Length: 325
Ligand code: ASP
Image 1 (cartoon, rainbow, N blue to C red):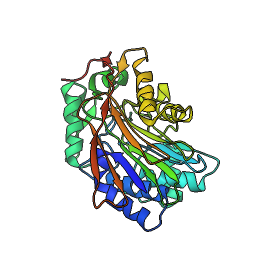
Image 2: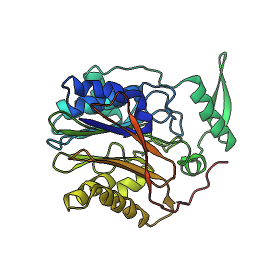
Image 3: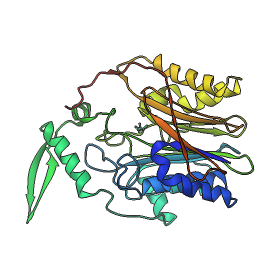
């Protein structure tokens, strides 16, 4: 039994390991571990109190994959429900043959299954950060309604330019990754995020895209990504790593190949990427474009998790937009 996770999964990995030790499945462990991160108000990149899109709305993406069957469930652009991973799990369990539900359809499904709904998903602190960010690029005006004053986007402001100005993926993004192998050797992989801060409304990242930000196959292993999702979508990063394993590469070599595929991408929006991966023998790796990044792991016989530095694969960043100061 083993669990690996991105470093922000530290808040949930002990609960996830408890699930495995009590005979729970890898899918159960991944879901429990990620729920703890989604509920954490201090994590501004996952679940409740994540950074919102450019309109100030929190849109969540998540997916979960079962390595036994390759069955998968995913939601994208979901508003009002903090536990995106649990809704994704229910897409996998109940909604066959669908894999991915987005926007209003995902929210309708969440209501139908009585998923926990918190209504307000942002604290005043995060709303203030959003307001300041927009004000800094001159995109807001004050609106007085009765006794309330609020900030709104200036009418008819084209969002396309605004997103280029306000989006700063190097500093205000993040995701949680969990990969577990249970007592019978089944592997599951889960990913959850609020995506880039200030993203264009309707933008979907790699986290709910099976093959991009998440892939698990009992026969070989699993991989999950955080970082600039558009890159992982374009290169099918998680699936690529698993396929490289299937072709006979070692886990470390498969990780390096998947990362170097990203280096070969053309175009001007190339940023940071991180991945973690587990093979069917329980070996694990983490790779990153940035030095000093870590990931965590826990075996059944460990009292607490360990932390490991990720191997660096350099990908020079090319950013065509004009990030905010
Ligand atoms: N991969 C996420 C996304 O693109 C964000 C991140 O991990 O930083 O939505």
